[in-house]
View 1 (cartoon, rainbow over the protein chains, first blue to last red):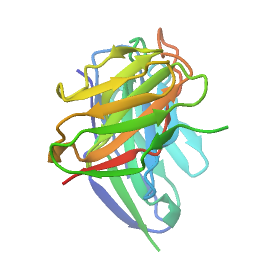
View 2: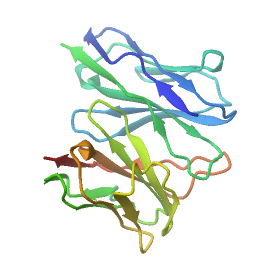
View 3: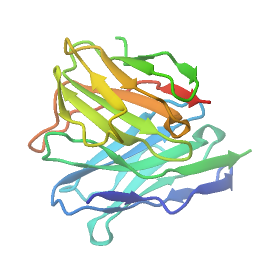
Amino acid sequence: AQKVTQAQTEISVVEKEDVTLDCVYETRDTTYYLFWYKQPPSGELVFLIRRNSFDEQNEISGRYSWNFQKSTSSFNFTITASQVVDSAVYFCALSDAYSSASKIIFGSGTRLSIRP
Amino acid sequence: GAGVSQTPSNKVTEKGKYVELRCDPISGHTALYWYRQSLGQGPEFLIYFQGTGAADDSGLPNDRFFAVRPEGSVSTLKIQRTERGDSAVYLCASSPETSWGGRWNEQFFGPGTRLTVL
C-alpha cells in the first residue's frame, strides 16, 4: 500500500526565517513519483515539483529546495527566507510510475503560516 | 488556454438529496480524475476515466457515488441520497493522456466544487 505522512500539522514562523516541511512516504513500488503541491487560501492546487524515484539529486528553485532521500523514504521541502505569500497548505504526494491509473496519493498537508 | 473548470463552485444541499457536479477538462485531454478533499485532509482519489470509460473507480466510497463521461470530455459526478459526511471539496483533474510505463503526464487540477450537505 502507498502512504504519505506529513507529521507537521501546522507550522508558524516569522518572515525571513527558513522553514522545512517534512514528508515520509511508504510504497512497495521500486519506481514512483513524488510531488509537492501548494494550496493557498484561494483553494486551488498549485503544482510545485515532481521527482522520479531514480533521481535522488536535490533540487533548488529560487527560495525553494527539495531533499529526496530514498534510504529514509523522505522528500523534505525547505523554504529559505520565507515570505508572507508563502502562507498556504502544502501537500506531499506519491504516485506509481507504472500503473495505468496513476492516481496521486496525498499526505494530510502542513499548514504554513508566515507572520510579518 | 482555458484550464479545468468545475461547476458549480459551491453547492449547498439537504441530507437525502441528489446532486451533480460537473467537470470540464482541458480541451484534448483524454484522462480525467476526480478527487475528494475533506476539511483538513489531502485530496483522496475517487475515480479515473480514460476516454469515456471508468478505468479505475476503486476510490468511490459506496454505491451512492457514480460518475460518467459519455463523450470523453465533460464528466459529471453524481451523488445520491447525500449524507452530511459527503461534505467536502470535490476536485477534478485532467491530463493529456494516461500516465503509464514510467512516463508521467501532468494532472492539471480545477478549482473544485465545495459541497455542503445540511
